[in-house]
Image (cartoon, rainbow, N blue to C red; front, side, top):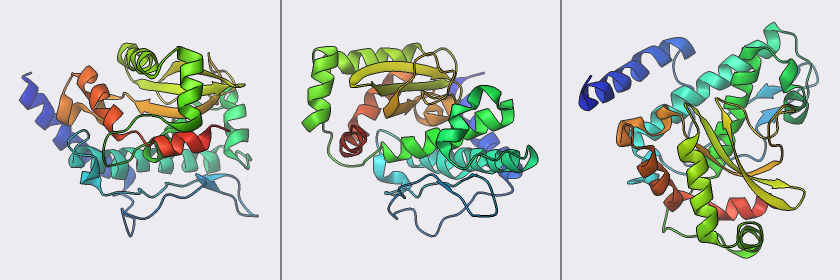
Length: 245
């Protein structure tokens, strides 16, 4: 299949099938509202319920590095599918976790549906908060010092992180994590993350990059390397600094 045909096929498929699976996109009142601090809410009479953070920018705000159509489909359809599916799994499987920590501490015991959609719900909330439109900038402050201490230089860190993202086979994520004061780079398959109790490399996430094809294919096709290069221009280093405690 030619590249243009495949691109058109994926675009049309996303528009048609994901809406059917979700029952229509979850529309938020404003795409420019501030993100919330938590990714879940717990009522007295129910267990954990995942919610979708609001974007702090318009869909087109990350262009030319991440295009508006990809952002809109990614946020309103893919992410809302994960939110819907994990909450349905929590109810159907009578899960009684009251926090994300409890949920991920028991990841190895979860069904595939709960595990994959719970990871997808959380990972994407984390990803949106890691993005910021504007002039390209690099890490500064305590994050920059920690990166240099752990990797030797910012340039070396970016090289290693990019390589982790590029070489993640199939779908998954690349992560910068804090492991008891030492920064490490890792990657996870599918919608796993370093908070899972059975993660190969565990730690507190500081930065994440989604390398599923749906995150970049409409603009970059199979050129994941170009997507990674563009993404460095929209990293929210202020948020990364807040996460390093």
